[in-house]
Structures are given as structure tokens and as C-alpha cells.
Image 1: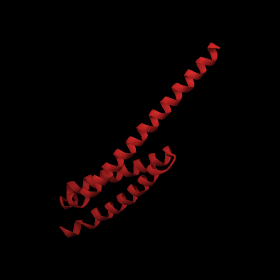
Image 2: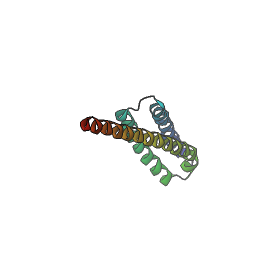
Image 3: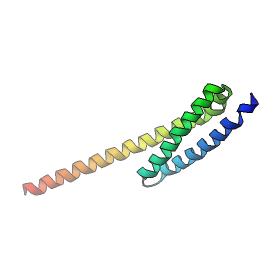
Image 4: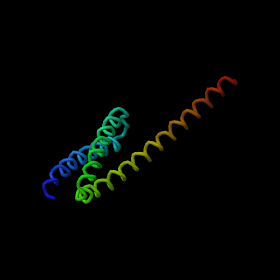
Length: 106
């Protein structure tokens, strides 16, 4: 049983490092779409490997569960920020279009 733990722990360390990078990008003043996309792709690949590790060794579930909870929380926070920024952009576009229409009317 302990023979299979180093791989889950190694994957966990990689995932935690990516999660820290994602959190840093998500908390930045300006969202960097390209950097976020790259980290999210790497994160997805690691999550797939972690899922496979759980399938092969149920002990990995106990190792990964706290991480997955934190990852879910970070994802939810990032989603809320993206939705708020999207709403802000939509509102600015509406204001801009209204302003253009008002100028054309005069």
C-alpha cells in the first residue's frame, strides 16, 4: 500500500504548485487570459492523472480530497470574478453604444 503513495504525493505536490499559480493569476489586478488558460490546461491534465491514481489506489482519495476541495473553492472564486468582469464589460459596451446612438441623434 505504501509503495503506491509516492506517486500520489508527487502528483499532489505538482497540483498544489499549479493551484498556487492559478490563485496568484486569479487574484491579480488584471486577468491574463493566456496564462490562466495554460495553467487550467495543465491542471486538467494533472486532475486526470490524479483520477487515474484514485482508480488504482483508494488511499490516494484520502490524500487528494483536501486538495480537490481547495481547487473547487479556487475555481468557484475565479468563475465569480470572471462573471463579474464579463458583466462589467457588457455594461460598458451598453454605455458606449448608448452614447454613440445619442451622438448620432444630435
